[in-house]
Length: 180
Image 1 (cartoon, rainbow, N blue to C red):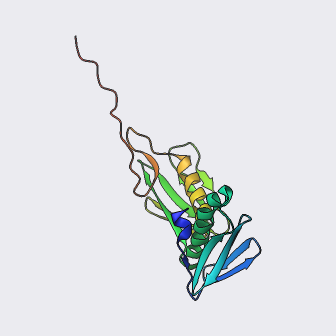
Image 2 (image 1 turned 30 degrees about the horizontal axis):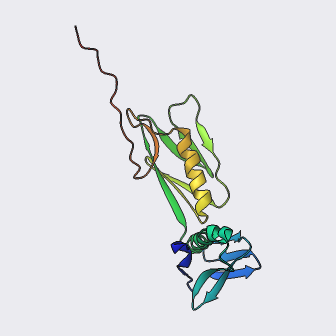
């Protein structure tokens, strides 16, 4: 049995959880999120906690049990606190700026790269740091991955866009051949 699925999800007073059949809708101070549960999984609310239950011990239900709990916990955290991913740019002349809602990156290409985020995602730039924030953890991760994909860090000089705290394993460059 999933250890993640057993844990209850704490609901604060500001969080409203609506369950209609297999659809779950979570409302909070930052917004509203929803997802659809697989058949055979249900969520029970009691004493300010949401507990995920499964109807039988079928193999498919065991596979989705922890997933539904994780999706519910991420939705509750997203509408109450929100999520953010930080990226760092490293390289001479690499710049980023926000124009309207779009992120404009100058990272060594002939033209600037423009990235337009979805409606519920905010992007901010401070020096060489890019912060992607919003309420949906999956969308935040996808936007941050798209930004990183523009210029991933290279292993020789470490130039590129990386996640904050990401370790880049460095390689030694070419060495001159010894005189014979």
